[in-house]
Figure (cartoon, one colour):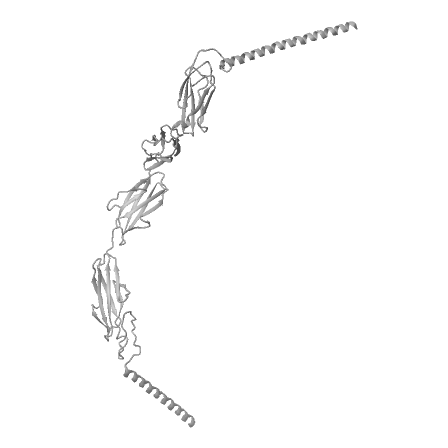
Length: 474
């Protein structure tokens, strides 16, 4: 038992000795540290660009050599400085002051130039407002100068329009008025709006180059035009567009001197040909509606294709008729002349450029006329050559290319002669001859029929007599 107690006492004494040794060692290390007073980490914790390095003094810490600012704000907005230049542009026209706040990273550093935070800077419009703050580290080995540049930019607040155009019609704008009305033609399907701001720094929202296009199938519709100023102020204009009732924009007639056209008010395209000596069309156009206006664009004609335009306007609606004029490389109207004109049994003394003749005839009902055109492409039409009487007029119309025509006239003087030739029999004589021939034919047929019947009866009587004689003999 005594042995056990003795063993335990030895163990306790051993442990107590070791603990005391450890405490002595720890105290010795602590004393060594306090005597030297050094920090191996001599680097600058700020890391800001442009700061000078440590002076190499072995008795200063990294904090003591720091000359930087942190938590920099201007009017409550965090600012990131580059190369110790801190810039801000203020675009709010209501702001007249800038409040600058900052903190020293090392509270022991000193501000050599400037004031302690916060600082208030009065702003001048359109200029750079500057403030400098010079910071020197505690150990005076580093100096940083911060430059605060604050620009007060005056922004335009003008959000008005100086011009508003709807489908080509400019609306008269009034100051402080934002609601307008306008009308467009009945058949309008698109509304084109051009809105030009008064200030070139303002913009029209959702418009490209101040222009926009909208579908318009309703009879009336409101369009919103939002104008935003440079400073952000917004004004909304409202324009109400209404379709007018349908207006008649057709032509009632088109008349062209020396030319015929098959006019139809619904047909807007025509084509005619003119001779080389025609320099301009003598044209007249009348609108169906007396309220409509007609404008004729009638240029001087040149050889080849030309275009004459007739514009009809009525209550904002417009239509256009176009006449394509082909000017031929020909000198006169002889294109539609006859080359020869002959009449059986008569001498006319024809000349191609003579268009009217007088002819004395016998009792003919019609004439055998042979008319040949100068050009094979031309058409020849003869009228008035039936039932000829004294004073009758035979017309021979020569038409070339449906455009050019000449009319030859033959004035008939009829004599009282009763001579009738085979080819000069009147219609009445022909009808009387036909009736006479029919009557003669019927008469001859009746006579032949009666004669035949008599012969048949006579033959029957002879046969009957023969039969009776035979019976008597028997």
